[in-house]
Structure formats: structure tokens, C-alpha cells
Length: 270
DNA sequence: AAAGACACCTGTCCGC
DNA sequence: TGCGGACAGGTGTCTT
Image (cartoon, rainbow, N blue to C red; front, top):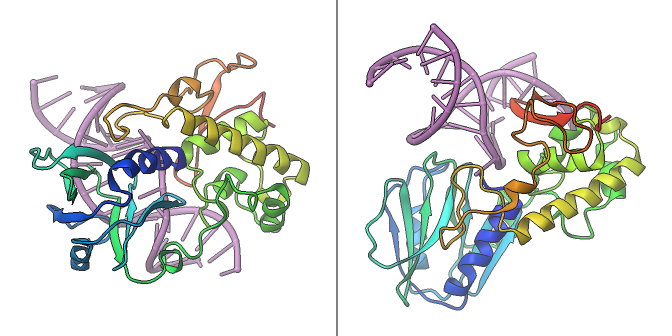
């Protein structure tokens, strides 16, 4: 579910309840996520959360004793609930604050993760080799152009690769390529700098708008208060196979690239 | 080094 | 109604 806008919406949502708050208890009901939750996560108990940050799709809760690294995978979400509220199925982890406010991880598919590191979290194995943040100045046409030279993979798979740029998942890859008028089938290494300029602009616009609307809810993504995200109504191509293009009215196509569905307009995207 | 297939897991939807 | 198969917002690892 979560791409960068959904993760950022989640980070913003939990921050008022966690930043500068003390963790009273960590409850793990199901440790078998993408990676086992380390027992050291209990070191978080008694600690003050000194920052609530995000790097790519990872949420970082930093304390003096270490940092919890949370990833939501495909189906994860965080809610704020009151301490002691009976857990539903797939409510795997609770971070109970001293205030009683509880961050509850719900993740049916269990592709998410909760890790613990005592090092600088930015140096963690899963994080250190990530590409630039898409909304930062480091993500620009010159950068994308340079790192794409000689790459034969499709432009769509390229921008979904977290080592090139973080946060662009299947929905926003499709949407930004549509907005930029670029076919998802182009080889990344053959896309011109001018077209990368347009693509970078559109990625920033699409992600920014989606964050403003609380992300996209296709199915089960919820903000921390349980509300859905409202960006779905702005989707031009994702999930619209066979429907008319909003721009030219030809039928939106669906193909498979890298074992993921791609949606695009064969007329508007060349 | 790069690209592609596969893995992890559960829920839902569609066709028969 | 039941069953099998395809598919779903991610990404590390293994094999070419």
C-alpha cells in the first residue's frame, strides 16, 4: 500500500503522539514480519523519542538507546489507539506511550518490518544505499540523466528502484509518467535530459499533491485516525485499464513490467 | 555490474 | 456456494 505519500502521511499522523514522548511498553504479538522483530526492540521501553523522521519509505523513531526502523510493506498501516484497546486480527505490534496513546501496527500480509539499530540509522544496511529523496534538490534532471546512462531497464522500473530515487512506487510511477507524457516502456538509458526534466517535475508535483490529500487509499490504507487518503480521485491511469484517458479518451492500457502492472495511455505517452 | 525471476503472506475478486 | 487462480500499494536475494 504505502508509497512515499502514505508513509509521510503516517509519519505526520503519529508525530503529535510520539515526539518527545516516553515509550512505556513495546508489545509484540507477531514477530514474524518480513524480518523477525529483534528482541532488542524492548530497549525502547523507558526511552524518550527524540525524533520522528522518514527516509524513503522507512519511518525512524530515534531514542538515546537506539532507533526503531518501521516499514509498512504492501499492506501495513499505523493507527493511534488508546492503551488496552482489544487488538484486531493482524495487529502485530503496539508501542505504548507513557500517556497511554498507542501506535498500533496492522499488517495483514506481513511484508512490513520493525527493526532496531543502535547505530546511526542512516548507515543501516537497508537504508545506507538508498537514492535521494524525491522532494529534495538532490533529485533533479541532471542526476537522473547521469545515473540512467547505459541502463537498459524500462524507465518505469528505473524510477521505482529505491537505489535511484526513493518513494516512487507503482501508483505514482504510473501517474508521473502519464503527466510527463513518457511511455513506461522506454529504456531508461535512452531518455533525453529534457524529458527527465519534465519527469522530475511531475514526480515532485504528484507526490506533493498526494501528501496534501493524505495519500491514496486503494483498499486498506488508513491515516492514523482511521480515515482513508483522498488522492484516488485524482488518479489518471492507475487502476483504470479499459477506461477512457482523461486527456484524449483512448483506452487506458495495462501491461506487466517487472511482474508489476503498468497503466498508461498509448496515445498521450510516447 | 545489471537485469530478471522469485521469495515472503493474506485477503479478495472473478470465472467456472 | 465452493474452488482454483490471479492479483494487490514493496523490496531483498538469488540466478543468470
